[in-house]
Image (cartoon, rainbow over all chains, first blue to last red; front, side):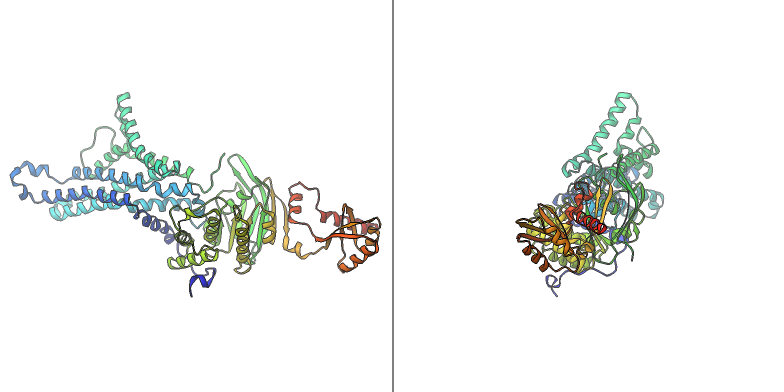
Length: 286
Length: 326
């Protein structure tokens, strides 16, 4: 019978489980994000560098193609932790741009249009809501970060052979763990900025501002106080230092990886605190 | 049968201010398909109470239970059984109504295919069938209210909490909304909590009413019982010398008080025709004769302290006094 003829009937069947309900939000959000042209363009652009890196790996494993360059070429084209740190830095920038575009559209409209009471009147907690939104960003940023990273690592392992893999396997782990940490940080920044300003465009600018302003503050602190610990204020540089430690590349001057990890953790806690204060179904003015 | 809502010394603070001051009551019976009206002046704590029931505020003391589940300790169990229509504008930007209701259904635990089917079904039910593929942002206020109602009932909850559902509706839409609410309880067996400033809406739809003032419950009445207990109040407007009417009424077993117009309490077996006869005997001309009982407005005004007593109370008191004299 046609729906309009049947009339409303109360649903009496079984309900889905908690995990299924949690995945509903990411599914709808991905569907809507994939309808945004800008998101698609940035994602496609984000894959240019991994393709270039793949070509680089291919060439470095086929040195006969570069016979004219002499012996130094093989050292120049060595695939190691430093190579992947460079790859990660460029992809992290693309991930940040992508998060600044997609992230605010996940939370700011919900707050601006009063949708949060609707979500939270369902069997869904605030933590579930944040988790679901983080899953959206995890799903969106993974194809431009750790997925191509691990593909490149796999490609290099396949071409260089077992010997290379057995001595460099930690790079694969580092790529995955490093990018996941970056996605979490970028995701928290995007969600917290959106929750704070509730305006999509401004929130997008604030996400980029968070990284650039802190980078500026870090440089200023180092210059004014003639110290090097100011670098921990720069999330991108702090993360770079952590990645270098994970991938076994030469560390940057300044605070070590553990100090940087603590700095990132403090930033993450601050962002979670912002989310805790701002993501409420009803605003209480004390 | 457990009560629909059970409050036990419920105290809620927002910031430093205590909004709910230890409320205790038991409202409704689960599965009975009754409506509970929540009334009170602005700032009485109605919305805070609803939001606490929905788990949006943490009580500082006491308990709130819905259908036997603690709102704070068992929020998932509560929310799986409740549909909530918030007072303020609430929608998801850039979505059409079908997608919106489907999303809400799936979040409530409906399987994907069922949620889509129910979304269509519910939108037709609330009268948005033709507009269901339009983005919610383009809806009028009345349509948004209907969409909010649809999302509250898409999963077939046992209890529907409606916060000012007729806000901003034109008279026709208001009538339709009230009809839908009545259908929800009468045909679908849902319990309804209706929070409204419009006493007429509550009187039209609700079986039970709770009146709040300054964070406390000041009155609780079973409207259904009051309707059933027809105390046969009559208001009579006459012209002529009505000095003997009181005595005549008294002699026939009825009691009347004149305050410009006569307010008369008829005994249970008193036929109205007899009243006409008395009036004719006294040579009075009847301008108006109306049956009346305590309106919700009078109950409300009395409860919040804007009226010393209701006419019903006055008549009842008179009746008691008269009987005492007899």
